[in-house]
Each structure stands twice: as C-alpha cells, then as structure tokens.
Image 1: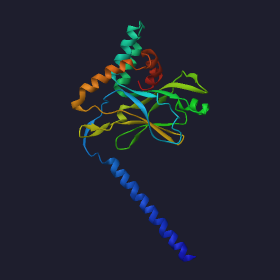
Image 2: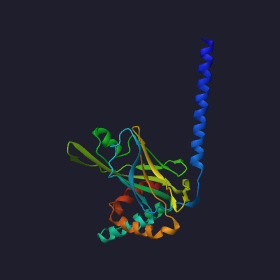
Image 3: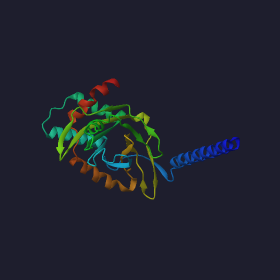
Image 4: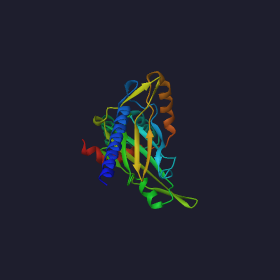
Length: 246
C-alpha cells in the first residue's frame, strides 16, 4: 500500500508540473507579439458578435453588435440630432467632449432569443455576465462602469420571446494602453468579452493599418446607417456618470 501511495504521489506531481509548464507556455505565447506593435485605432467602429466557446450558443442572437464610440460617432450622432430638429443643450455638448477625451465607451446592442426566457431577459442587460476588454496579449481590462439600458424591447418570434437592450460599457482611457502587433499587414484588435453561463462571446475590432486608411474612411461613412442611440439619449445616460468624474 505504501508503494502504491508513493506511485500516486509521483504521478500527481508529474501532472501538476506538466500543467504548470503548459500554462507558462500559453502565457509566453500571449506575450509574444510576433510583429511590430502600433497604437490601436479601430478600422471600423462596428463589431458583430462572435462565439469563442459556448455551452449555450443561442444565449445571444447573432444580430447583436457593438459600437466603438469615438469622435466620428459623436459627430454623426450630433449631426443626426440637429438634422432631426432636436434642441441640443450646452450640457450635452460639454459631456460629449469630456467623455470623448477621458473615456472609451462601447455601445452594445444586445439581443437574445434563448429558450429560457428568464435567462434571456437577464443576459441582454449583462446580468450574470462578466464583461471586460481583452488586449491582444490576453490581458483583461475591467470597465469602470456598465450602464444597462433602461428600456427593454421585446416581441414574440414564433414560440419564443425576443429581448433587446442597449448597454453602455465605460473604460477609463488612463487604464488603457492599446497596441496591436502587425504581421504582414494584418493585426489583431482588442475584444470586448462576455463571459457567463459557461459560454464566452466577444466583439472584436480590427485595427487600422497605416496603409489601409481608405478602408477606415469607407467604414466610418457606412456607420451612419447603423442603428445607434440618439445624441440626447446617449449623453443623458452618461450625464450622472460624467458628473462623478468632473
């Protein structure tokens, strides 16, 4: 019995050592850029939903998408409000400038048609979901604020109910040092990861490569046709948050 115990102990130590070696290798691979590092700027503000691995692949609908809100989106949003005859208060413009300078906001348009409607209701507001930004080397950056949409949209689709909600995920720019490795004219951008219910979904933004700026300008124009929150609604949602950091 003693001999058997010794054998089992040696086997356990070998397995543990192998696991530690494997983890170390994975960390080294993530930290190895394998190309020239450049500052990250999204080639397009729009990112569609992707699945990394999922016990429940239908937890979120493929129609879900996210916007990387930069100055171009702010200008589009304001122009659309002005063209629609909305009266824009000075406070909204002040909040817009302050947010664009100090924070990164990701506007997430979430949809779920999951079989369990109570879970579907929760996940579109990111309840039970861990949300973070993942850099190219696998490092997570946690948001300073998640603002779930106040308005829930729902409708029937066959026997299932569709839930939709627009959430804002806010990161402090001082916490971000986003760079991407470029290899042969291609690079991997950061991901917004949605981790919950034994499933991982993500939005990923491709980086703008210096010799592909024409593509960047084209996609910014196309963003004008993408549904996004109105100017006053968007900065109204951020007003209370902005006052805390003013």
